[in-house]
Structures are given as C-alpha cells and as structure tokens.
Image (cartoon, rainbow, N blue to C red; front, side, top):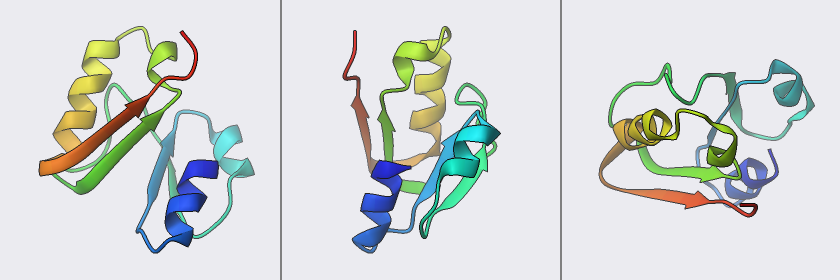
Length: 87
C-alpha cells in the first residue's frame, strides 16, 4: 500500500488490488483496496486513466494473461506503468 498511499496523498483516486486479504488488512490510507486475481480482475474494461504494477509480475506464472488484464482495465490513451525491482 505504500505506493497507493503516496498517490492518494497527492490527490489521485486510487484502487489497490492484491490477492492477499492479509496484506490488504495491513494497508491503510484513503485508498479503495480489494482482493483480486491479477490474471482475472473483477474490474470494468477501460476504467482507469493509469495502471501501476510494481514488483508483482515476477510472481505471476501467467504473466501474459496478467498483462492482458492490466491493458484491459486501462483507458485508451491511458498509462500502463510496470516496474520490477528484482529479476
């Protein structure tokens, strides 16, 4: 939730998704958190101006499917920002 809180503190409307309800229970701040599977997001098509995925894809066996979901929920002309700090 660190990046989510940082964005929310700067005025962005943030929805955070994690597969772990335990991890989300530790998160706080003015963010809408929800449990979800990155390979099958329960979010509408074209619903976000920007999608951030930080330090996650390296843990997903079906990385192509996850990328497809990230693209699906981003609005046309929106941003998809991916960062992997460990390889």
